[in-house]
Length: 213
Image (cartoon, rainbow, N blue to C red):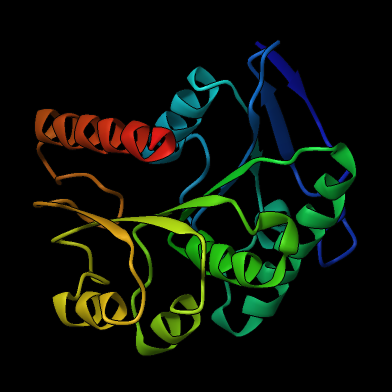
């Protein structure tokens, strides 16, 4: 395992904290992990996503946003700043020579995924995993235009879980869906450690299938 840092300046002009993990020789491409507002790349769903991707021989770039670098809470009125952070990340990695990409986003990160997948030609053949997407009419309208293969994961106890909105998006775009019974916005079952671990195992197995199909 190798570790590196990329020189990425975010929307505010400050360096974005990041770590580039590499499994070594024989790598397939690059995976990008976009965290949630309060869900870092070291928390379970993204930690295990990274572990799986490394086992699949992808380099993996774990990131933070500008507001997280500054120790601030997310302000929804500054969403454009977060999307610009995503653009800055892409500007930096376009120079690195990768041709195969997987994007994984958690909650807020799913909005970054939709933005980048819709805008960046380099990502035309990418695959994307949306963990606990923020389903809404606005999100659906934007994500319906994404042409890449998408795998979405959400729990039945997540406040953004809406069978109606999921069906609405399904009517506009084909995507793979995993609904985890009883899990919340952190993809855990409150008060049930073993149940949470079993749900995470299910998520990991389905991700491996998605990456390899």
